[in-house]
Image (spheres, rainbow, N blue to C red):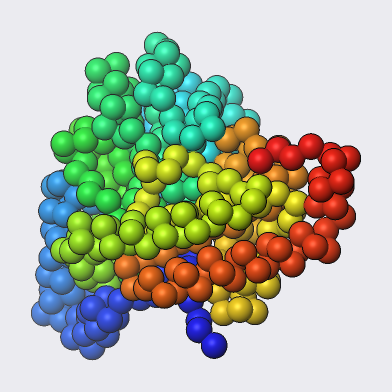
Length: 396
Ligand SMILES: Cc1ncc(COP(=O)(O)O)c(C=O)c1O
């Protein structure tokens, strides 16, 4: 049976280049970068090289790169830090969007309980923030604007350049959660006027548990944890050097053929979009063009996402119903609800996140498999029966 991994937004398979770089690092640079002896100094050199490589790719200075345990920690530190420094100046208002990852939204919930006021911008049915809404929402006491670069469920790309420009003009700190975007679309923090950015290696064929928080020079950074002098004292703890090196190798590889890989992946994505759109009462979620090259997200009326996933898994397809972090709970996705979808439709969602390693043949296999499974589930669904009998109205 064919086995197709189409859940790259949840995590990716580590690339051979990243794996080899990690093994080499463990064998040759096993010292602690803080140690003064030559084994330690070798590790310090390897660490510095990885920091410089990553900084260069992002358009940053190496002193602006902080290694974290991943996207969640980077998001938390960026937001908490801006809140702490904002509050010192009497600024206790934060702007974000309704479709952020829980690493952002749950931190904002905590800050709200601590007396901050949070404005979550709507994204409309296309799933995209309007920069003018950001401008209108900014107040004298706004400490931070945090808007994700690309959404993890529906893949929509946000107008980061425009939003960052407005924030710079209004002198408000701008953070972007670029966990889904880094390594997939070009990013240059200096050109795009980004003050803080989070990324995570396991979304671009690097290892898990390692990420970056970029913080522009001049923007103060508050610690989440206390300890030694690593990461200039802002993120203490002995560096996870093999993972850092693996991340640098994966990012280098991802950006080296980003354009070609993006075009190839987008062409595969469009085969899926075209094929799945032919299923009756199906709907593509999020803007058809302003989306990540590898993201497809559909709703099928009258079916339940979890059953769809299990049956697809039986056919050798690894997909997701949205975010890995919310699957397992029966709450419909906050992202799909933000697009204006009713609860019962938001339950029938399917996210396929592909990579350039997939093939056209696999895309056709997926389209056929989804069509069959959706038909089967509708045949046994009482909801579908009442829709077909006209007792209930179709929404899509
Ligand atoms: C948009 C977004 N932000 C943050 C995260 C969290 O990253 P990590 O898994 O590295 O903690 C993820 C992925 O899970 C994500 O998709």
